[in-house]
Amino acid sequence: MICAENGMKRTVNCILDSGAQRSFVKREVVESLGFNGPKEHITISGFNQRNEHRKLMRVEL
Image 1 (spheres, rainbow, N blue to C red):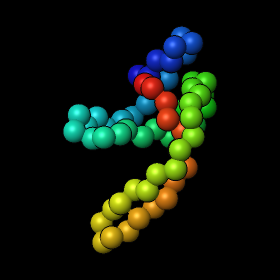
Image 2 (tube, one colour):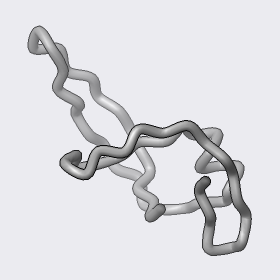
Image 3 (spheres, helix red, strand yellow):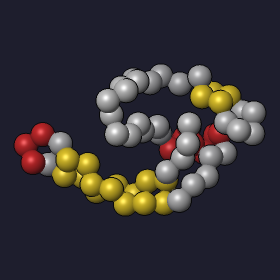
Image 4 (cartoon, rainbow, N blue to C red):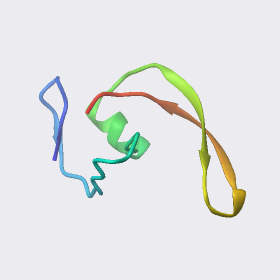
């Protein structure tokens, strides 16, 4: 369950990895809980030298 500072709560499926640099949630979760934060561009490097460029919003969970 994710709890926002405004008191809103939402049950979500997630994978927790304490060794990961970041965790990601879907836009619908962020919007439904009223999160807001700075926008940033990142590159996600995957297998076979595939890179994906994404525009994300950084939020604190």
